[in-house]
Image (cartoon, rainbow, N blue to C red):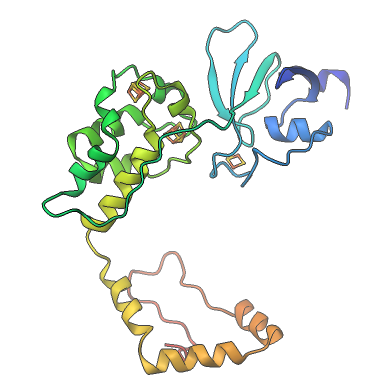
Length: 244
Ligand code: SF4
Ligand code: SF4
Ligand code: FES
């Protein structure tokens, strides 16, 4: 690789020359850095590799994911340190006379301190309307808060920047949990499937599977039939119905 393919960055206070055209993670790994913490899925879903960075000559502080964001010449990158955040303790049962929406606000009353500065929206690497879902929690609209925060990867970038010291990801997690437990429509097919696990035929088949040795199990796994993505709901059945 010639010199033109290399760029200069700083990572955690140290200068490095790295190959361009990579994510921050692969660029640093290619020059020999090994990460034993702060990296997880490598696919942009676990939030473990969150970093803040500035690019030379630009005023903005950005948040990003090392496994997703491209390396840019002049970047000054700092990994997000672990920092203590509020994690309310709760179970999902509601005290007498309580409602799910009230309970979430009672667990995270600091959502009422949101000053709508929008900093959380600006830094969210998933592009979520964080301020919006905080407002939904405040208003008791758990359904929309759950939907709006569904792809939150718990990276904590918003919480680090919040001047009102709200833990947005943990409040949203509580909103999704209480919504799922108390307000979301129950999935009928799931209830039926769970019930079916109790019947005699299902138990017999499970017993049969438990006795199968590893090679036979592997063959069974490789031969499994999968529902095609375009099958109209409720119409597809596998050819081998012995387990049904
Ligand atoms: S950063 Fe905090 S105060 Fe600002 S809009 Fe987001 S939740 Fe509200
Ligand atoms: S909402 Fe906050 S914790 Fe969730 S992905 Fe966005 S910045 Fe990260
Ligand atoms: S390693 Fe999981 S989001 Fe980057």
